Image (tube, rainbow, N blue to C red; front, top):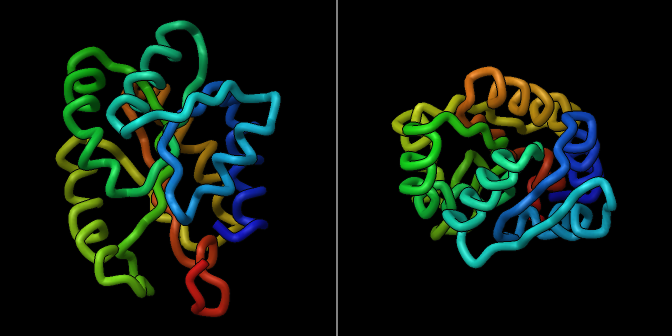
Length: 172
């Protein structure tokens, strides 16, 4: 993420009351993972894959924490079995913040398939989501996703793209 967008993501996590974060760093959100790890507000647990990260977030919630999973949208495919088994069956809320590779403006051919399957897969898993392309909307979207996740006892997601990751059309 661009630095000011990463700061907004951290603000959103803090204001949402998130205190446990897991995930697998990706190119667009690496700096968010670094900021989370350096911030005493959060307990940070990096994972070897997104399914394990989702499971850690679920376990943290069962232990009384408020959790967020930060990953690239390709990780939704990896975590799909864990999400279906844990959340569809038992009702565990996790706030998911996903970089939206393959969105309009993508410059890498390998990112395109991630965008093709992200939204349909979220819909199949019954995960409500919002696409955020403007930095000034990011913190509020994270807070709203957390509120919805807890209200429905099911994950909610924020897909991050646009001005949050590109500067004047140059991918960061």
